[in-house]
Length: 299
Image (cartoon, rainbow, N blue to C red):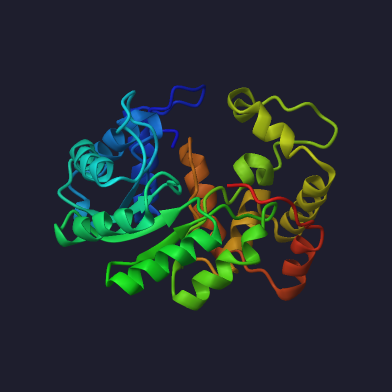
């Protein structure tokens, strides 16, 4: 999401190439983006970085967000989906995707229209599979039911909000995905930086993330989250690894297919990849989960 972003952590082609090359060297082969990230610039950069490697990687992008000023420049209508998948493929310099995802629910478009269009996209060979992101469990179940009743391609993955500080999807979404055989690929596994330990109890935030999204940061600047972070840092000290690696290791011990890690530095990739070797026992998992307090659902 940071590729081409108009923000303090903007990553352009040269640095993106270093990040992508390091990821591939370390065995990472799944790359997720979206058309709305930097209004397509993220897709352009990713496509350039993956030139000559298309058959060795899994590429996913998303559709739903605003891509222009016109009435048909957002949503999950047939027109917008057909227009945007071709545009995404052009920016990525690819003839097909591995996974094409709806980015959010579209209340203005019947889910049946969206699913019929996504089914056509698969039949046309423009993507191998379809997935969903950022929707609620009842919406996801409705979509799966409609696919079954209409004989259409069904969503094979859910890109949901899930981490040690936000576990609301353990109530419904994750059990639903497990029951339906759906891949779980959570975003924000590090709680947008909280689980790296860079935010300190009682200190005013002073990070690039805070500068770009102060409302989000301050909304999570609460006691229960710092209690969780205390546990993460304690376990990290015992294991002699970083807090971020503990947070990712926790997720890798849960029922997920893969966490989606945002990286703005090569060191972020190196740190994340090393988390696969961190082993947590039952006591570690209990310590990490003990301080969690259920809260409101955040899309």
